[in-house]
Each structure stands twice: as C-alpha cells, then as structure tokens.
Image (cartoon, rainbow, N blue to C red):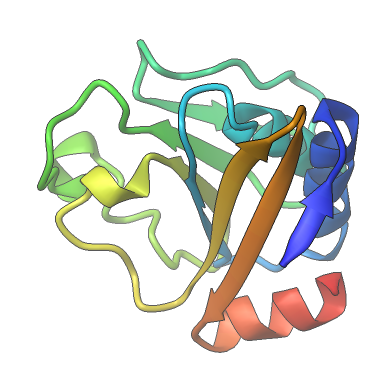
Length: 148
C-alpha cells in the first residue's frame, strides 16, 4: 500500500509513471469521484512529455493527449452503464497497442479489460490517498518495476 499525501503527490506519482512508461501500457484507475484519477492522468501526460493538458473526458468519453514520447488515450467510463464494450467506443484497437499509452477511469464499467494492465486503486482518506497498485501482465510488470 502506498500513501499519497495530496493532489500534488498524486500528480507527481503519475508524472513518475509517465517517465518510465512503455508503449502498450494500459493504466486502469479505480476510485470514487474526487479520488484523484484525473489528477494522476494529468501527471502521467506530463511524464510522457505531452504538450497539451489533460481535462476530464467525462463528456467526450475518450480524448487524445498528444505530443509526448507516446500518445496518451484517456478514457472516462463514468457516464456509461456496466458492461461497456470498449470496441463500441473505438478503444479496442488502442488496448495493448504498442504505439500508445492508455489510461482508463472507471474501468469497472468495461465488459472486459486487457489482461496486461496496471490497476491503481485510490481511496481518499483524510485529505490524502491510500493507493494499491497491481501490475498484471508483462508490459505492466516491466513498467511497474521501474516505477517502484
């Protein structure tokens, strides 16, 4: 279990993951509203070297953050019901694509996730966040080992 003290620490953690990320990395972010999922993705984009800023894609569902070492596809499934087929969003080609990084907020709403991903569970506690990270699959384990 990790502890991120505030939003700045959450963004810094994302930045450090982005700095070591490989193409094909899928990051699944779990947590309640306000837990810091989008804040983490903002840091991830900066760590990748992206020039554009990240905004919550809640209304667009999927957005591209370009200009870094790897394009970052950011998906937010909050507004969708359970059992969403990522192919219906046009995301199926991106999952595990070695030419980009994918961050998915509210991944529990997807019908199926790739076997290879980093799962980040954020729980807001006393202004900070308790964080559990699970690396599943070869790309995720390789990147998570460098991130540790």
